[in-house]
Image 1 (tube, rainbow, N blue to C red):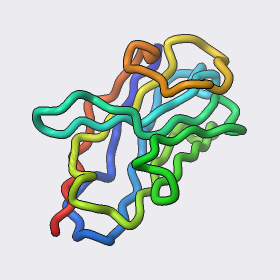
Image 2 (image 1 turned 30 degrees about the horizontal axis):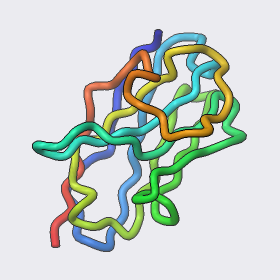
Image 3 (image 1 turned 90 degrees about the vertical axis):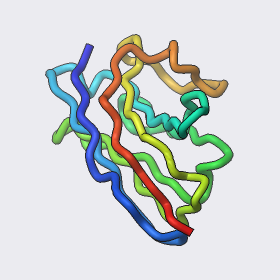
Length: 129
């Protein structure tokens, strides 16, 4: 398990950009695939993007494709979510999460929250129209 702390959220106008960061603790951070989820008020938590432990493969929700980029720097124990062309419907609390199991490769399906064993506390992103 790893401890995760998100940062970088805030208020931005539609069409703008934000970069979220997720700092992880522990020597095993680099052995876990990492993901971003988001949860809007009154809605279920939904998958946004995932990156493998090595960074060689990424997966995006349809809503994120072409606008968001997930990346990681294992030397800094940090995973990022670069978001551009933001829309009001991107407004949500964004959470980073670590895979439940070490060294898991690519997913062939959209992962669920149950596939992740560690979560951060979330960071609020608000996109105004």
